[in-house]
Amino acid sequence: MAGIYLHIPFCRRRCVYCDFYSTTREGDIPRYAEALAQELMLRRNYLEETDKNGNPYLPEIETVYIGGGTPSLLHPEHTERILEVVRRHYPVSRNAEITVEANPDDVTEAWAQALHGMGVNRISLGVQTFDDDKLRFLCRRHTGHQAMEAVEQCRKAGFDNLSLDLIYGLPGQTVGEWEHDVEHAIAAGVEHLSAYALIYEEGTALWTLRESGRIRETDEEVSLRMFDTLINRLEQAGFEHYEISNFARPGYTSRHNSSYWRGIPYLGCGAAAHSFDGESRQWNTADLDTYLERMDCLARTGKATGLWERETLTKEERYNERIITSVRTRDGLDLHRLKEDFGAEAAAYCLRMAAPHLQQGTLRLLPPAQQIPDGILCLSRQGIFVSDGIMSDLLMTDD
Image (cartoon, rainbow, N blue to C red):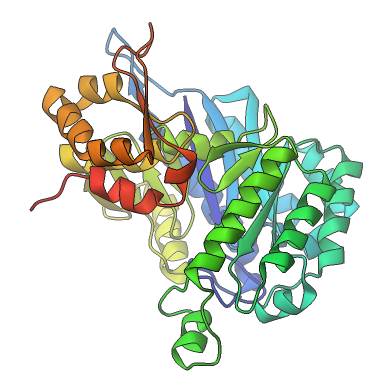
């Protein structure tokens, strides 16, 4: 199995906190959609595997994720063109999860019906907060009311798998205001919710505002209280906390994001998109003009040499990725699989570094079972709040 990620870098305006590659040149969307189609057609062999007889084959595509940027800026005909190319050139599973990210103010019933009609079965809405003043500060285009309306329009179109993104720790935000956001998200009746602490990335407008003293970063203790409130309230509402920042009603975990955490290969197409084949990473240029020129060249010549940056991961790097992607999830780190993939010495090192956290109760070692003979290492409820430090301690370093 494998996944496909398609990056749409267009935004009407940049949010103050965003450091992802994006551009406001919406006039280039038609050309970009065709470039994306060309890349999909010409890179299908990236995901090739070999069967026991040495014959190459493409694994079934279980997830397709159209992210950004703001994919909802694409006219439905462009989205349909891209998905048609995916289905024609890749073995897409009949039960594939196909997600499109959207800004709430772009969502109309007609737009939602069009996407539902072309086989999209999951919408991820970038809400961030339901507080209109804070939405204006973040430079978001929608209001809290429009966010709720977007959910309603998607429901009318037939979508039964919706996700909301929220951000907590906004400047000046109180725990009570955050509780208000969480209650609105629950009231929206969505199946999935992702919630992230606000991060001040260097180079963003948010970073500049903090450095100039015009805003203050939320105190860490307050931020932790917000996170604790989030976990408690969503669990009460029937959500499962299946990854540090992600919650889902039973049966509605994000299959695409889960595949990242499980190390499943994926092809990433579009400007700034990354790909992973299990051993190495490739990534596209984070520049729209260069990307369009390279795809034009690829279409003319069929030569792909030098069009993507590439790095082959060392065994130590792959071990570290396994730690970071596994420990953060409810399923935890399978120590038997770790031993099989990286050797007994690596597994012993992991347990040795985990020992202090096991003693403190921030990590748990689930007992061996028939299919997991060495047990599972996972975060405790207490450990979730200090997960970055725990994962850092388990990593292999050059020291």
